Amino acid sequence: MVIVDDNANKKLDAMQKFMYTVKYDEEIPPEVFIAFPNEEKDKLKKMWRASNDMQYAISVLTKEKELSMIGKPSKVSVSVTRNGIMYILHFNSIKVYATPSMFIIDDEKYNNEIIYLKCELNNGKIIATDIIPLIGTQREEMAKEVMEHAEKNDIDFEELIALSYGYYPVYPITTLMMRRWLSAIKTPISALHQIELSPVNSGKTTFAVRNMFTYNWAYIDEVPSIPYLIMDAKDNSLGVVYRYDGVIIDEVDKYASNLRQIVQPMLSGMSHGIWTRGKGSGNTPNIVRKIPIVMMGNINNAYANTVIDKNAKSIFTKLLLNAKLNESMINALLDRIAINTVVITNVNSSDLITMKVLPDSTMRGIQKVVSDYITNNYKDYNEYEGRKRIYYNIIRTFADNFTNYKDDIAKNIVEGVLI
Image (cartoon, rainbow, N blue to C red):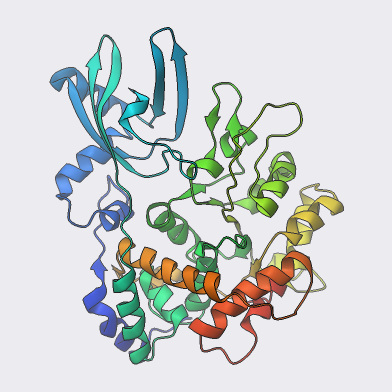
């Protein structure tokens, strides 16, 4: 059993002035309140519901002829008619038509922010009258202050990350959250892809859902199809790798057999940031998207004990072989994985929740501070070869400056040590 001791409480108290108390409501994810801490609760609930509840959205539109929403479209497609081009924003509740002039699409982002949208009924169509991307603020100076304050109070970086996500700073949740967070590091050098197998109640879903709002990641609780992941040939709507800054694929232990259909297209994207649907399937945008792919699944000790060579890669290999992936495909996939984590320790993360988190803007600031440092101070440590060498260099550059580990934590992470 993990025990929250006086030292953990002391460290939480030391960070209180920077933190936000999490609100819970049955109708709306708590991460929405974290993302918009100053918005009136009832108003926020209505706007969130409008983007997710079709009956409610239609009812409001019918009565009031207009509707305000906050949400992120699940898909954006294009309609070309004699009257011109219209973008179609597909929300869980309704489809909203918008003219291209209403929002800007640049080379790096394709409507990938949570947006505020007003719309109205017009000749049987729901037409957007106002669109404002709710681009997440990035408080870099505040992040530096938080990191300095943590250091003065003997709070390690991994403890700060655990606190950021709302957990007491105790092992093993500290180590787990920091390893997961490493994929949020953004450098032009490479994305840090990872695979994690861990017991239930180890904080995977909390991490994934929070990152949807904090870092604009997509959370998928099953193996996605190629159209959903990359591009839909039917309407040329772009998939999640173009619209999000990271992708978490959960439940890989249940759906591993479905990985076969997407592994080949994923290999090029994970390696070079070039995402294609395969031969003869049409062109995808000529945009480099070096975003992290994070695969997570559940594991228990009984399964881990069936592997003779008990290390992370051996356990992953057995899982993928059982899913009928061929060995060459498995090797190619694992070669692209920077962070290998298998957890056989019971975490019981629900017992470690503090109800306090760092604001999204501060967490984005921490991401920028760390990412900029690695980009500007990247060093070749002359370890390993190929991709593994690059991954090691990124993680070692991070570890040498931001952590107090005396052993080579970068080597442990890229080789995949059991926790």
